[in-house]
Image (tube, rainbow over all chains, first blue to last red):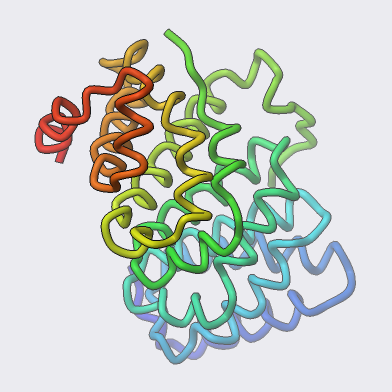
Amino acid sequence: MDEFSSSSSFSALQHLLKLSYSESTEDQQKAAVDLAKLVDGTVFPAVSFGPLAHALCRLVPSSNRTVASYSARALKILILDDALRPQALVAGVPAVVCGAIKQWEDEILCLRELLGALQTLSWDKQCVKGVLQGDIVQNLNDYIQVSG
Amino acid sequence: MIGRCTRKRSCGRCQASDQEIAVLSLATLSNVLSYSDTLLLADNVTIESLGVVMPKLVEILRLSQQKPQGLYAAACIANASFHPRLAAILNDNGGNVNGYVCVMVLVS
């Protein structure tokens, strides 16, 4: 993974953050897809995570399936980093993820990314409190299957 | 770009993805239940909602022992057994708590 240090990465992130705050669904789609690609190959220092987390928390509850699934994927990848999860908690990520799971419970693509993020959040002692406040146990009970 | 798939969870074509979702849900429950003897010890509301899942976990373990679902269900049961209320529900539903604690050691 590349360190997030080059000016080109920084300006790319700035551009994507700007697009994510746009009211246009097309801009939001581009922001979500490109952010998912960007975070997959870049290590973000904790100081850069705040604006990114706020942008993703705005995109994940989108009513557009592509925006929601790609931004959830970006969030899922980002919070794998132990150093970023405390800030994710402060940014309200557990509540956003729990709300989006209820919103997208019939859409496999979104649900898979969101449950991946939820699994990582539930692994962290601080974040698990936020997950439980999201009243998500009933949904998880619905998703598990009894089959031979 | 993700295409315009409109498949729903209940659709038969989504069986593979459904299994992934079931495994992710079980893994999340297992993580949450790992706090059953600490954070959740006095959280009666959450414990009661988790208690509803216990019979299903026992059934999954009984039917899917060699599948990922079965292993995660075993981890859930092992973690839940550290809480007295959840352990009682498991015993009432045919879960041999002591046996599953041994399973947890093997899985981890």
